[in-house]
Image (tube, rainbow, N blue to C red; front, side):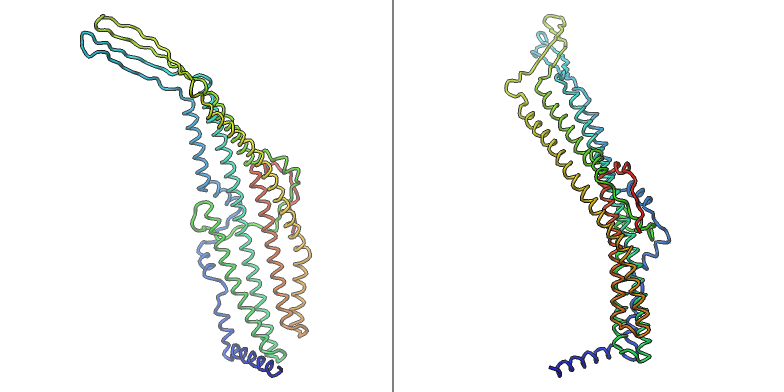
Length: 440
């Protein structure tokens, strides 16, 4: 068994020795890994332009394709109102009796339908409620676009911070490699330590390239919100550690009826009631009033004709359509209550996520990250003095990088939860009472 272990150790030493050749092949391969990926190089062509959150929101609200589609719906609703206010067209008819000229009779009639039961007013009311729904849906879409822009913009900001963390991790790995090389040259450490340090530096460079690729993709997603295939900005300006405050549950629920989703459901219920009124008005038949003139050639004189016609609702009293409309109205009322319940749950869940992520971010900033930084500083000094091994130094580096990455994720989660609350509340979020925002 000992012979087998010794053989394994000899093979491992031989492999490491082959990796760390005198010509510095590993060091050369590490140096060949570019400190910045091609993605970052291409992004440099964007120039030095920066983008603030206000600018991103202005672009998205002005050019988002989905918003333009919702605005078209309002135009369509205006057309429905115009059509609903139109009165029925009169009908002009002509009749001829007998083809013989001496006994021929010509009749010219003008018939005008008269709507009874408030049909025209019901149509106008239903069309106006439809416009209310379209306007509420536009407000919902605007809140959605604002929320998406907030998320996408902060993802770019987080990606920028992630890139900076990756650069710092690469620099730390370079320092560890240099320290290991000095110890190897001094004969106080095995060449395996330098090999391990160089491999760690290679992994850090690869992670940096991945962070730069993530940053480029997040820029593209943000630009897509205003219809651009590529980003025309180099970076965004802002701070993730400026955390939003946590509103009270009472303040959120007090603004429940002002949210876009509730307004859509309320207007849908009102439109359903208006459509029910239309079907109810159709139970009353319309009257057709006719006036005309009849020319009797045989008599040699004109005769005035007056007429009145009224359909008899014996077989079709529109009972089925009215029953369907009543059911649709009840369905809309149920949907309104379901929307209220769902929205209440979503608001409270988003507030809980905001509270939890904010507490996590505060704890990391106050205790964890400073402790990890102190541990790394101590491990670095100790390794340079020969008191600690390379594994201790690398573990301290990984711990600090992981804690900062976790802190970055907590910041982003906090902002996303706040953006979700703002999306659900829409314009009602502007009336929330101010809450503390400093949590660094």
